[in-house]
Image 1 (cartoon, rainbow, N blue to C red):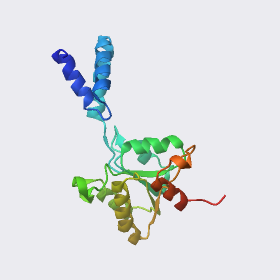
Image 2: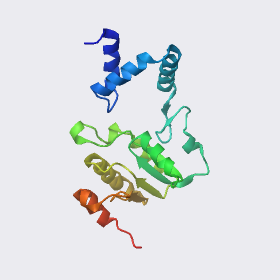
Image 3: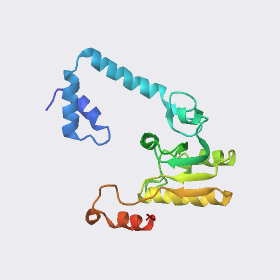
Image 4: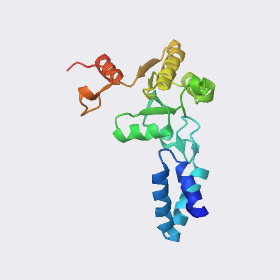
Length: 197
């Protein structure tokens, strides 16, 4: 229906997560309406990010240096590591400015259904970090999915014998949520993680 160049551009946008046919078409038409300099800058920024970003050698977070900014910051609490599934999770947690410890990015979860085991994610380097440091607590912040829960349980069983405290982020009702619309798992976790007031 469209000329080949725009059809290929639409296909490219559709490869992005959460972008369907309609959104991809809208983005493609918007992009061809941009001036050449803006398109060149966009393409250059995309290539630069792809070429220059790498994973921190310590925690696995995205960085443009050998170690990420968080791992280089000696003022952070060196006795706590918060384990997340993805580098995007680090950004989300940093926005709240409540946590001042270190991170470890797994780059996924254990997923038997998808054929992904402990060796397929960034778990071995976490265990090595724990052996070579004074970490007292590992906070597991994987998502509340079957794979996230399985990964959390596996990590807990692996870490606890070393005498390191293992905790999990609390689960429950979101602020402003109505109880009547919450699912059973969320309500169960809310009751389980209740706090004294």
